[in-house]
Structures are given as structure tokens and as C-alpha cells.
Length: 378
Image 1: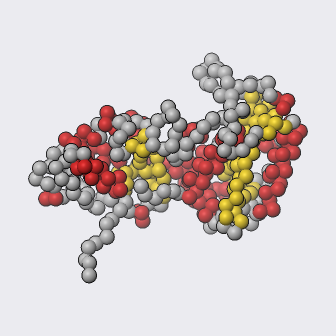
Image 2: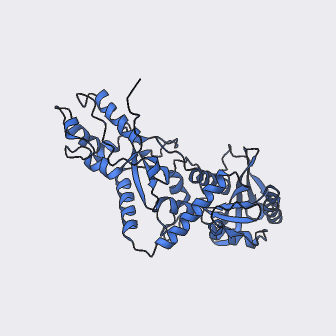
Image 3: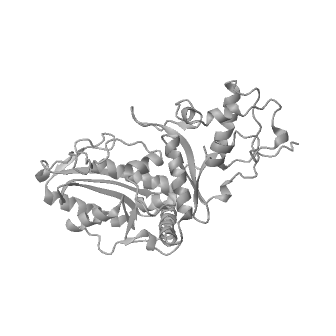
């Protein structure tokens, strides 16, 4: 009968691994477990900036981005029960590094397994999500940002708690396969935001636990000559990608202004037959203003965070904002990240953002990634 104990898996703080792992005084490693020939230089060199930006580094991961876009240092963002977040490396990554160093003949023997004294196991965490940082500088900046979030007083805690409540509600509702979830996005002319140039949606519902999807992209006939794509004096550049709806999502349809209004209205009205409707936006404010201008049937819509805990609604319209969910995920309610940054963080490859159909699709992808909390380990 085997008496061997099962391996303990989990996560270590990035700061400990990056800045202390090479040290002989590193508290995770028992001094008597170190091989007599131990040399800290290979580990020290592995965490130098030059090494970490090398594509073959064990801690770097290619995320399926297109040619010319960066991969990055792969970490995990762990959220603790008190609502605080830390960037972590998984024990699987550390074990891979130990064997990789030996296979590359950088250590005479495999380094010992780290002590589990400061290992965070899954039960220590309320959520874990993947993150990719293009450079060590980007990772250090993110670590500093989280440290500042810890230091900030209670002023932000109430808002962050409300955002985390919304994320908890979304996770419960998504896991229950409740109703219809539909991401909406509008593109408008930068010279006059009341002029809608594009509309896109990406929706999902479940039939006997089988996930069904529907997508669409519409351009407005009367506004075909209202083009973005210029750089403004303040340096802001708004791309013009209405002709670049990704083919794998579907085909664009040109409609009149009147037809767009009926299309949007019928889409939202038709979803009620499947139960509650969750309208998903990335920064909802402007899109909701556009829906109201179009006369869309969203009267009575409430923020998903206002639902009572553990409530599964059977009808109604609920607003879900992925900027809020992402802020809850990373512990920052002071700044809202753009869709490109959110998708990069969640390892969602993107093409032709600022096309309404593409943005709706990627917004729903981001919602699904945060609602499902995947993956839990490397």
C-alpha cells in the first residue's frame, strides 16, 4: 500500500518568484533540501528583463494573437475572499521551470520542490483568472497598481464591493444558464454621436443545456459617408472598420435608419420569450443613450448588481457592464479599461476592434471568460 502523499498544487505570489526565488534565503525552500552544488545564478538570470522578454522563456505564452502582436508573461490574477487581488504564478509553472533548467543543463540536478508554507491553494481563493503581460515592465506596473489599490482607503471599498457583487451575480446567473445574454455595440460618427453608423450584437441562450448563439452586424445606408478614421488634435484616433466584420462571425447587412430601429427593437423584444434578458455592454453609458434614441424597449431595465443575492429572475431586462466586471476582477474601480486591454488580459485574441459586430462578439467572449472564471490552473 502506497504511503506517498498527493502533490499539493496551487499558486505563489509573483513578487516572491520574480525577486526572491533565486536567493538561498528564500523561505519556501528548506536549506537542507538544496543540493550541495546549488548555484543561484541560473535562476537569477532567468528572471532578468532580457530573459523574460525572450520568446522561448518558460513563463511566456503565445495567446493566438496575429502576426506582429505580442505574446507575454503568463500569470494568474487571484482574488481572495476579502476582495483583494494578487498576481500569481501557478505551481505547475514553477515545476516546469525546475525541470526546464535541468533539461537545459543550467542546473546539475533538478531543484527541490518548493515548500508549501506560502502556497495558495484553490480553497484560499474566491476566483482565479489568467493574465498576460507583454513585458516585465508591464507586469511590474500592474503589481504597483494593485499595491496602490491596497493602500487606498475605504473611499473606494464601497464601490469595489458593489462591483464584486455584480460579478458574483453574473457568475451565478451564467452558471445557471439563465435567460438570454446579448452583447450590443454601436459605432457612431465621432463628429456627431447621434449619428449611428453601425450596430452589432452577439447573443447566447441555452436549450436543454446546449448553448445556442446568434450574431449580427448592420451598417446604416444613409450614413455610409459619415466616416471615422481620422486623428484628432488631442492625438485620439478612432478607426474606421465598418467593412471589416470578421467573416467567421457572419456577414454584414446594410439597412436604412428606419430598418435599424425596428431591427434593434425586434431583437430585444424577441428575446423575452426565453426568460430574463441580460444586455451586455463594454462601458454601457453611451450605448444605452443610443438605445433610448432609437426607441428600443428597455424601460424598466436594472443593473444586474441590484438583484438580491442568490436570486434567479424569470423575467425582466438587466444591464451587464464588462468594464465593471473587469474592475471587480482586478480590484480597481477607479479606471475603466478598454476592450482591447480587457481581451488581452483575458487571453482573447482580437481582430478589427471598433467594428460594432466584432466588438459585440469580443464583449460576450470577455463576459463568458469572467463569468466562468476559467481556467483555474496552468
